[in-house]
Length: 96
Length: 96
Image (tube, rainbow over all chains, first blue to last red; front, side):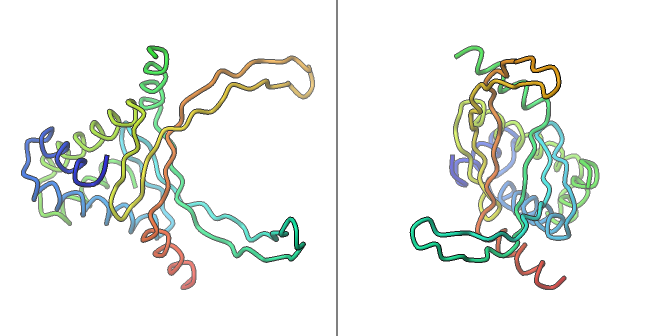
């Protein structure tokens, strides 16, 4: 499902226009991003939570040349699904 | 940031009422969850993409009792941040 289909699906479900949905989604992304950039955790009720984790720098050794490269530390966004979503996924896999 | 603060932040940014924002967020969560339960990937423009990954079953050995337990396979939602978000996080960490 791409962004366009996502907008259409949400607009139908929430009974809003596509323009309103777009505006709202932009706000969602902007608020989430700002919080994460500030290093804060964001909880998304019944869906999950986002948090930023720091991956430490590490030495990478090329398997054939043995050249060592220092991979700098980086920040990655981690998502942890809520228990509700976890249970839903579990139920679904049982029905397969 | 909890759910209430998230709703307030989005409502202010998108110039919508809190009730409309709640309705919209419910629709977002519902559409995202349905897609993921169907095993589909969902792309969230400029933020990232969600996909379901299956963790295979594995044998766990208790360190002291040596009792083996079979951990059943499970489905987990994986989030991959967009390049835009990645760059924003990177810029921020440089400013620290």
